[in-house]
Amino acid sequence: MCGIIGIASNKSVSINIINALKKLEYRGYDSAGLATITKGEINEKKCPGRVEKLEKILFQNPSEGKLGIGHVRWATHGVPNKVNAHPHSSEIVSVVHNGIIENSDELKKKLEISGQIFKSQTDTEVITILLTEKLKKLDPLNAVFETLDMLKGSFALGIIFKNFQDFVIGARRGSPLAVGYSNNENYLGSDSYALKSMTNKISYLDDGDVCLLSKDQIKFYNSKKEKINKEIFTLSDDKSSVSKGNYKNFMIKEIFEQPISIKTCLKEYIDKIREEINFYNLPINPKDIEKIVLIGCGTAYHSCLVAKYWLEELTSLTIETDIASEFRYRKVRFDKKALYIFVSQSGETADTYAALDICKKQNVKTCSIINVVESSIARHSDCVLPIHAGPEIGVASTKAFLGQMLVLYLLSLKISESRKDIDQIQYKRKIIDLKKLPSLITETLKEEEKIQLIAKDIYTSKGSMFLGRGSSFPIALEGALKLKELSYLHAEGYPAGEMKHGPLALIEDGLPVVVIAPKDKYFEKTISNMQEVIARGGKILLITNSVGQVISENVRFQIDLPESDLSLTPFLFSVPLQLLSYHVALFKKCDIDKPRNLAKSVTVE
Ligand code: M6R
Image (tube, rainbow, N blue to C red):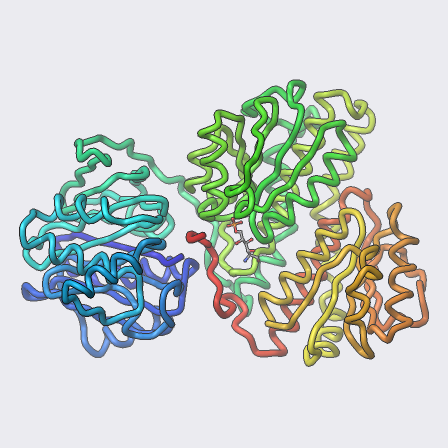
C-alpha cells in the first residue's frame, strides 16, 4: 500500500511532510521516512514504526530544505525495518514508492551481475539504482522515462535529485497520485486527503503520466513524453471532523456515529416531500437491466453479499457477486445489459479499481458506491453513488459498511419499483420503515454494556464461530472479519446450515459461537443448527429480535434487538458484532484504530 508525499516550496518543508504523512498513515504504518535537499545534499531520515517516531527523530535533528519527499510503508518486499523503509537513496537520487515492481527480482539479478550492491530487500531500490545509472547520461526527465520503461507492475513514485534541486518528479502507473497547487509551494501526494490541509486545488495523474513539480509550476507529460494539461479540481469543503472528540479511539466514535451517518445518507437519497428514492444518474435505465454484478473486497464485498439477498428478493434480476481480486483474473463473460457495481469505502482499493478498469475496457455499464468522492474508483466509473458517511479513519470499517448496505438497499428498492417488481404500496411502506433506521440503530447501541460483559467472558478463547442464514450469513462473515482484524482472535463465519458438512468438528467445550438469528423465514432452521452446536459444548451468544422470548436455557448470552422490517436486520445485527470485536480487542489491549499488518486503503494487489 504505502503513502507518498512530495513538496517543492520557498520555505522549509519537513514539518508539512510530517503532517501529510500522518494523514497518509491509513495506507501503511510499519515504517516512515523522508528525504530533503539540505545544504546541497540528499538528507535521508527513516525508522521502523509510526510517523510519530520519525517526528521525534526530526525534533532532535531537524531536516532543513525547501524540497523533499516522504513515505509511510506497508511492507511488501522485506521486513519493516530501517533499511527497508523509504526513501531509498543513492548519492544523487532519492525515491519513494507506492505499489509493487513485479520484475524487481529479474532486474536486481542483472544489476548485481553488473556489480551493483543492494542495501535493502525492497523492490524499490531497483528504481534508485537504475535512475542513478541513467542520470550519468540523461537529464532527470529522460532518466525517469527510461527507467519507467523497464518496470513492470503498478506504482506511484516521488523522486528528488541532488543535482537538480528545483523540482520533485512524480510518476503514476496503476497506483493513485495527485498534485496540489498553492502559492510558492506545490505538492505531490497519494491522495487529495493528505494535501487537503495545504490546498484545495488538485489535479490527478492518469496512468503513464509523469509530472515535474517546482515551487511555482507543475508540468505534466503523458507516457509518450508529450506535454499535457490537467484539469484542476476544487475540493469540497468537508467540515466533518476527523478528530476523536471525547471518544477513546476512532473506531468507537465511528460506531456511535452510525445513526447520524445513516440519517445523512437517507436525506441525500430520499425526497422528503414525495417519499421517493432518487437516483438520477444511473448509466442504464433500471427497466433495461438484465443482470447486476456486485464487486468489492473485504467488508465492502460483504455488503455486496447482503445486497444479493435484497435484490433477489425484490427483483426478478440475475444477481452475481464477486471478490475483486478473483474477478479481475477470471475469464468473465461481459454483458452489455448488466450493471457492474463496485463497492469501496476508500475508492482506492487496487483490486477493485483493476476490476472496474477491466469493465470500462469492455464498455459495459459501471457504477461505484464509495465514501471518498474524489477517489480513483469514483472518477473512473460511469456513475458515482456516495455513501455520505464522512471520513472513516479506523482501519476496521464500521459506518462505511452500514453506508454501503444502505445505498445498496436504496438501489435495490428503486430498481424493484422502476421495474414494477414491487407495487407502490409496498415500496412506500419500505421507505417509511427505512426512515426508522437511525433511531433503531440508536436503540441497538444501548446493548454496549451487555456486550462488554460478553467480551470479557470470551476474550481469552482460542477461536470463535459466527453463524447465520440468508442475509445474516454475510453478517456472520463480517462479524468474524471484524473480530480477527481487531483482536487477532481466530473467527470463522459460516452459513449455519453448512455446519454439519465439516465445521461442526471444530466445536468443543466452551468455544464461543455467535448465532445471528432474526425472526425471519430462516429463524427455526437457525435455532436447530444452534441446538446442534449446544449439544457439542459450544458457548452460544445468540443475537435475535425475538422480543425477550427465551429461546433456549442453554444459551449463554442473548442479545435482543429492536423489531424492524426484516429487510433491515443486516444493519441492526451488524452493530453488536462491531461492539463485540471492539471490546474483545480492548480487553486484549490491541491497537484498535491500526490493527497489526493492515492498512486502511489497500492500494497493492
Ligand atoms: O476501501 P475499501 O472499501 O475498498 O476496502 C476494502 C477492504 O480492504 C476493507 O473493507 C477491509 O476489509 C476492512 N479493513 C475491514 O474492516
